[in-house]
Image (cartoon, rainbow, N blue to C red; front, side, top):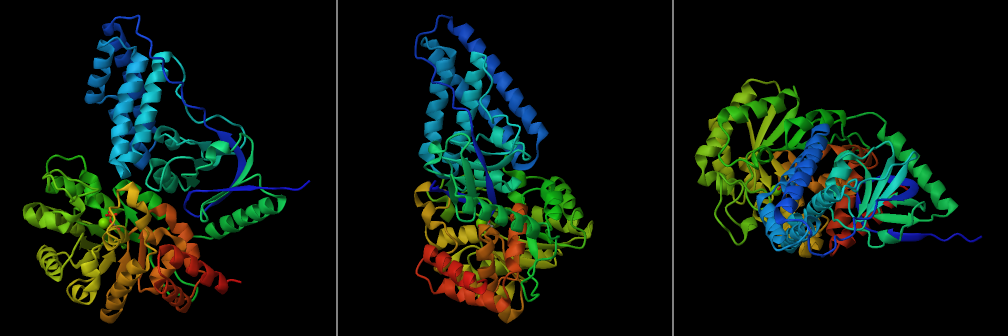
Length: 558
Ligand code: PEP
Ligand code: MG
C-alpha cells in the first residue's frame, strides 16, 4: 500500500510538535428559525433575561476556576452577555414579534459584524461574542452549551475557532494540540495557547477537511498540519517530541549561548499574579512589567497607595532579581481614559506613551512616587523605563525626573525608529535601553499593528527592523550599557539568536516562551549568532531573512 499524507499550513503558536488522532468540536447550533413568536413579547423577554443570567453566571463561575488571561476573557464574556445595548437591541426585535432565540441570534450577529468591521484586535473578539450568543441560544432551547468533546484518550482538537470559555478549561492531560480554521496570532485561542504552552496551529484553511479519527502531526515551528502521515513521518515526529521533551526538562539553567556567554532570560508580566509561573519557568527577573494593564478599566488615575500595593507585590516576588517596570503606556492599543480621552484619527501616532504622561505630569509623578516607595520597601533590583520615547530630549526629561524621585536605574524603551537611529545619543543619557519590537516594527513598516489588512507587515524579521536593533546594540556596546529586547520577537527561538548577534544583552518574553528560547540559545556561539545576524541583515525582506537564517543555522548543525 502506498502511503500519502496531506500537509495543511497555518500560523503556528510556539515551537511544539504533537501527534495524535483528530477529535472535532461539535458543530455550532443550527440557526434559529425566523418564524413569528407564539409567546407575548414580555414572556420572550423574560426567557432571554433568565438565559442571559444563567450564561453570565456560568461564565463567571468558570472564570473563578482559572487565573490570568483566561479569567479575564471569561469575565469579559460574562459582561458581554449582560451588555445593556445588546439587551436593548434584542428586546426591540422581540417587540416586533421575533422569538427570543431568533432575536438573540440576530441582535448578537449585528454586534459581531461591527467587531469584524473594526478588524484587528476587535475583530478577533467576534469569536468571543459568537460563543456567548451560542450559549444563550442553547440555554433558551434547553440544550447543553456547545463545547469541547469528551474523550478517554489523548487527542488533537480541531475546531472552527475555540471559544475562550472552552480554551480556558481544556483538560491538558487529554488535549495534545489544537488546530483551528479561523483566528490569527492575536486571537484568544492563540493567546491562551501561548500562555498554556499548548501546541497550536491557527488559521488553517483546510481544517474542515480533517476527519474525526485521522492521525495528524502538528509542527508549530513550521506552521504545518500533516494529515495521515507516513510511518516514517510519524516515527520522526515521535523522535522530535521525545528529543524536545528531554531538552526542555533539562533544568532551569540561566540563559546562555553555547560558548557560555550569558543572556539573561526575563519575563514580560502584566500583573504580579504571573510572577509564580514566570519563576517556575526559570525567569531570571522581569524585563517588562506593563503597568497600564493594571489600570485599563480605570476611569480615574490610580492613587499612589493603590499603585504602591501592586508594585510591592511584584517586587516581593523577585528578591535580589532585576525587575524592569515601564511607566504607564497609554494610547492606541492600550487606551487609558484618565490619560488621554481625546479622539485622534491616528492614535498610534498621537499623544501616547511618554507624551501623554508628560502632558499629565502629576500622574507620572505619582507613579514614580509609588515606584520609589515600593523600591524602598523591597529587595528587588528595580529598573524603571519610559515607553514610546522618540527623542533625546524626552530621554533627558524622563531620566532627570525619575532620578529626582530616587530611582537608581532609569532607561527608555526604543520603539520609535528615531530613537533607534539616535541610539548613541539616547544611551548617553539613559542607563539602559529596552527595545519594544512590536511597536518598532509597526513604526518602521508604517503598518498599524492592530489592523488585520496590514498584518503581513508586522514581522520583526524585516531587515529594516533588524538594522535599527543593530544600531541600538552597537550603541549599548560602545557605552557598556544593557540593551534588552521585550517585544514578541524575543519569543521566537531563532530570531532570539539573531537579536543577541545584533547586540541584545537580555531577552524578555511571555513565560511560556522561555523554555524554547533557552534551548535555542544553547545551540549557537556568540560568533555564530553574529554570523546569523549578518545573514538576516543582508536579506531583502522578512521572509527572505527568516529563510536565509534557517538555512545558515542548519549549516551549524548538519
Ligand atoms: C513593544 O511595543 O514591543 C512592547 C514590548 O510594548 P507593547 O507591546 O506593550 O506596546
Ligand atoms: Mg510598545
